[in-house]
Length: 163
Ligand SMILES: [Zn+2]
Image (cartoon, rainbow, N blue to C red; front, side, top):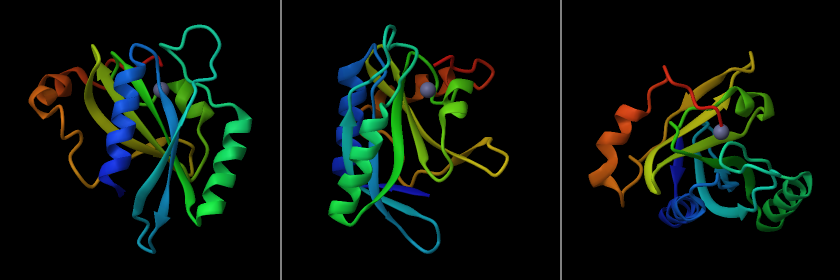
């Protein structure tokens, strides 16, 4: 289970909104309890390194991963996850996301529809390198609750994201 600090959640969703219609991405840091639950207490927004169309793909440069590892070490935190947005697509990982994913990390995907936050879901690779959903402690998002319901209908695994 993932638990977001309110500030981390706020900054992640703000990044997703502001970067629309491109994909945003960044790192999530925190601590992991013995029961496997993860408390996310820090965030670093990353520039989408993908050349060309950033609406369909995100890419984090190797130097950004190294910088994130160092950032975590300096603060006594763990690099626990990567978030990115799916502009006008459901919060479901694409095949590209799966192939690019590493074990251990939580992959948080934020669906953004016409600039508004939709669903936020988290995914982790299992031993067969398939994504399994990881629960998020609080219902997300808080700010756009009034517009939440229509986006649930859009988030249909029958129409997987291409991003
Ligand atoms: Zn994606």
